[in-house]
Length: 224
Length: 273
Image 1 (tube, rainbow over the protein chains, first blue to last red):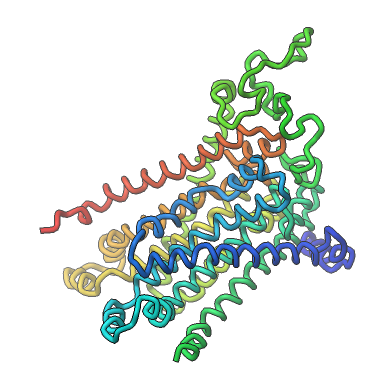
Image 2 (cartoon, rainbow over the protein chains, first blue to last red; image 1 turned 45 degrees about the horizontal axis):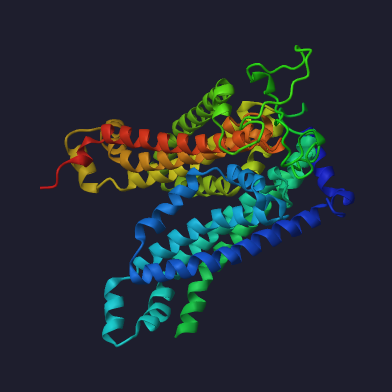
């Protein structure tokens, strides 16, 4: 119980919230890293997955890349990138590692979503004379949206976790509070950092749950 | 709280390396295990010898001399890695089976069980280990407990899906043959859930192998310890070798479990007529 009250007093101390090593700054870094990498990995993964899914090609790659991503330790990739020449360019090793681990769930889910669109619906759309482009954007994409969004949610949660680990390899973000706490041998700081990270991850997960619940309705409204 | 093994004194930032081993220096990378190098130990030797010009001294990524000179350190790390993974997944499985059976039997239990395990799975690994710090202190139990919680999610979900997929006809046939609820569970439902459960077990094991490395923060990370100390000393061969071994272990464990699954479920290999 003592640890709990120490943690609480660490969290409520104003000095720990401001400044370069303060919680606000670390939270901002974490949010920025997560958002930037989510946008970048969506830009990389979704067009590829949509085209592959539309054409029905490259399925083995798109599905197995997730299994490969799971087997490779995030921490190892972060450290390996840090030791390569890329490591000299500030946040880039972290950003690249984050994108590498966010792309597989996006790719797999979007591809599976595209392939699971009812074939009868696709054939009906073709019979109505839709071009490939119309078919992709007006039929397949809206119907695949729930699974695509699942992929985005998994990627976002993965990004939050990976950005936390980046602190071990010298990156910024909330994880830095934890690693600094370990190095200062301060259990309250370690636990406080962990609580902040856990709450942040759960908020991101919750936010995407909400988006996922309502987005198909907006999309349906938008596409008529 | 004791200082974790293998952590630096600075704020965990490898971009401010100690002057002993500046990045790209030709100096022999210093690690805690330096004494493992045969013929090392300059302290016992009065002569000041120039560092040997091998791949270790040049700090190359791929280095055979690393394997020969530090074989037993690698071996110890691999053994720790395998122990942590095996113990965690085994405990996870022991807890997951009753939870899944309970969630199957009592409908009201399914929601809370799946909800809590999903929330646990969302918490990033570094935070999970840190949250367990006040409970277990700096020990291997932190890593095991964290990994158990992660594998629970995957295992419960898959075992429950397997149990739910048992056809109602099969269940009724067993009941008609006089099977009681316990025998029905042990002899019919659980065996039929094995393929789904094994799929979950494979994912849980592969994830655990990769997550053990994060245990380096408390000094119990198997190969992760070598990656962590290699990062702090810019020891490229050590980081690459340990990382590759992690992937090899993950793939080997996956194949092993796939083999076990085939042995356990001979009926799934029946030749389609």
